Length: 236
Image (cartoon, rainbow, N blue to C red; front, side, top):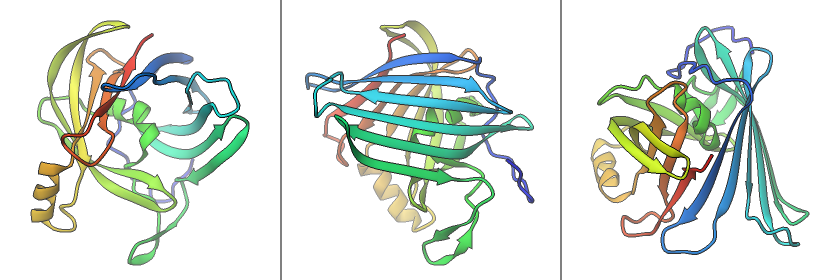
């Protein structure tokens, strides 16, 4: 990846070991079943190549499976989202395919001319790698540009809250607790405060020890504080 006007991101390189594999389980509070998740990170020509595979465990004709491959550049001690490829299958039928190239490109913006993606752009699935590069410290607040689809990205407020001890299937881990929610301050500060009081946040736990592997993340299933939450938890 070469940028004529290089702007470093906020994501530091956590030095993830080559071939690291993490297994997760996704479930929804009060509901049976769930999804199995595999996340593998390998080193590839000055970058991390990550593969995220999600499956319902149903091998039948309508079993759900998803594969997301990403390339994350490592430049001067910082991480940058470079490419994103995703495919979802129902059995053997393709439900959707998605592809994005973030480096050295321009894209259409709402209400503006074509511009490059911001330095802190982060596909949601890229958070498993990029957010490990936060400068973990009590009270740290950063703004990340969460990429949603096509040319759409939205500010995500990321706050490092405190250290906690988490006990789960994979063991006991001292972790940093990180709270994330959409930001609307660029639209209207009062709207931002109102949304922050009604839209449930994402809560993530990252190991205190480097390379700060994601241990658990809980997230809303609906835009309601009272809605059941889903949890993705490290199992091995």
